[in-house]
View 1 (cartoon, rainbow, N blue to C red):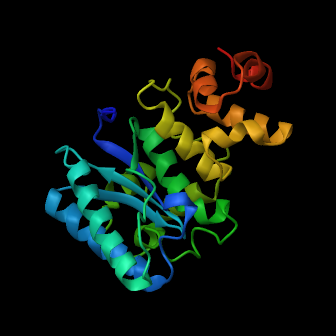
View 2: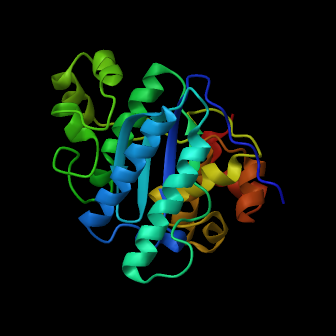
Length: 254
């Protein structure tokens, strides 16, 4: 079956997510993280893609990129291949390192761009690892210190400087950001969005939602509705009946 075309951002900004296959670790130590950062930075520079924000977690990576030349796919293909080769050679692992192709979501609008930056930097805090300021493997330190691979000027200019940047990240941003940007999701992109939302917040796949305890199941369904999926789309992805979804997400109906 042919792969669906990726959504194109009018602004050129994309939130990219790479995940370990079967939720496996993709970074076993800081040396692995360093290899990934160096590989990504070199490839993006070669392709003319700006890094706006990034964060590496143990089993996934977030990247916010500006790709005005539409070269993201070729860059990500090289990065994923080269890093997988490194990881398999070092660890003796055999098989796929990443979970399918990378996920990418258009980021359009200044306010949504800022929310995406904050979401990415606050990923360690959301996971209970550390605050953004204490976490080393993200671009937060480049924003409050010296930029190395990240183009920080756009975001800092929008917020009004480093102090405003730090204050913005300390605000309670619960529920302000979703992968689909608050817009309806197309059928071509529904699987990508659903997988990203559920693996990020609930550590499950769409097909696993049906077997969850009722309260947890309903939280997943509400998150999918928040991300812009329709009841029909959720039904197709999870196998849960439309009436059940409607009851569980009645406040999300439009």
